[in-house]
Image (spheres, one colour):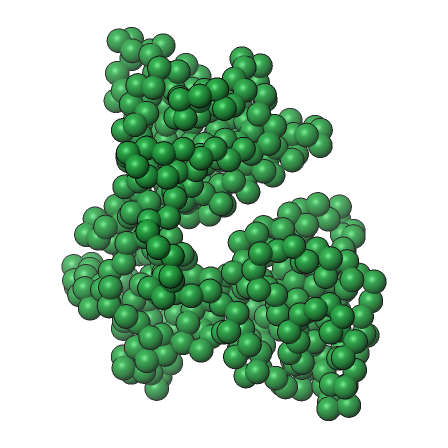
Length: 454
């Protein structure tokens, strides 16, 4: 499990962005009385009682955006809710429970993660008495005021209680089933591949593009291990998405990528790489999902084209995804399908790997000595300490004197070192830069984060 995400949701103008900034301790999200200022999700790494979480600010539910971006805002909110390990449902004590709050409560009624009700703008003890009307939403309530600085410690404690167990505390017996999303543009052979996997006609297979209109979960076993394959609709270019059916197909395919442990991005060996392929690749990268590029229908080109040519084609097209493995298969006959699934298991294992803090710091120190970071404003950036805080994706935090001074190019260098020297060679790595406080010693950081050696 990666760093738990905590989504802040609610109707417009209840103080979600103010709450975000207040918890983080500095102004990151835009705060404005105008409804609908927050559109995209804003995230920040936050420590809560010795654990890291990723705090996510969202737009106001039910807001009608004047720039006709309501649909986009709603997608971002739904994405935050789908990805959240816990949710802060924010209401306004001074305005009381409004009909739009009721709508938000209904939307959260069936989510499968803990929801904490946060009554913001509770500036005085007198106002605190007015929060009782919110109990009808059936959630544990914490009264706070970002303006009067009331209730922050109580909110942090309540949130810490709602967070899921760490990987090493979880009680789940045995190896969990690996979820594999099969994605790609239309007619690349995804459903035929699923049928071959399960050795049964579980999916409709057709030469008509767009047959699969919803994401379908198919459970199967291989070598005594359980898997779940997620077949997804074939995607079209965004400007070609003209119907509600096309829109929801795209939406569900993206949700399937978010649910997956490993993503198989399918290409048709007889077709050129398209803009849709590039959009899918960007989405997979942004979600930090382990991925395999799968060149399907290879039997149609066998003997007429060397695999090296397609490999170079993929590497030249997706330069930032140079670490992603490539497989050549024939889904209809099953050629190389089992080897593909075995490689997927390897990626799954890599994404869940942990590195001891001492070993990681030794590696970072060697990387700094071999290639020091370039000067920034005549000062040499310093990295004091590193630790892995989560898996799936492997998530590493670097404590440094000035996070902004470490260039994107130098961060790529460090990621390359991690891939080369650690067990993360073929999976995405999430890297956070965090400013070390002046009075923090290494022991202080160890204690705060409660880092345990794997």
